[in-house]
View 1 (cartoon, one colour):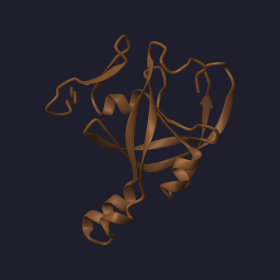
View 2 (cartoon, one colour):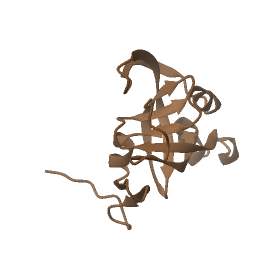
View 3 (cartoon, rainbow, N blue to C red):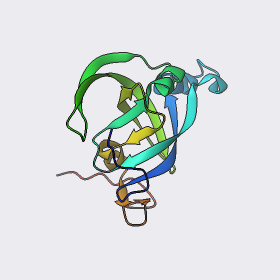
View 4 (spheres, rainbow, N blue to C red):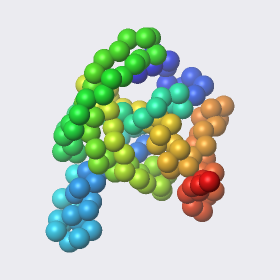
Amino acid sequence: MRTIEVGKVGRFKVEVELANNEDMILARRGDLDPDKVRRLKIQGVVDSGATRLVLPQNAAKKLGLSSTEKVKVRYADRRSATRPLVEGVYLELMGRHSVFNAMVEPKRDTALIGAIVLEDLDFLVDCTKQRLYPRDPNMIVSEAE
């Protein structure tokens, strides 16, 4: 977590939809009623200086995501801690979606959307206007060598 306030250059809020990806797979196969998929909408803070997706502990619990391992986190103020990592977080943002691992923070109330999510969904960050833009509005562009 950074100590910079939301609204400062480089950090701004967006709404994201999260779901348990295992539930999504079961619903697609017809093994789970789509209304039973554990999902929620939550405010997310876009932080291009952060690395990964971070979820509040209560959001991970509502989605039924259990920790698979622990990861070390280093905060902007140089503190470090060990936090749970959850897998299978389906995330939808501005019509684009993918599945991510997420670090879980016990005292957060918003998601933190870092560079891994932004790159995977192919969003460009305009810090001045505090907006996300798809690089190509028609589709995600993947680069290959």
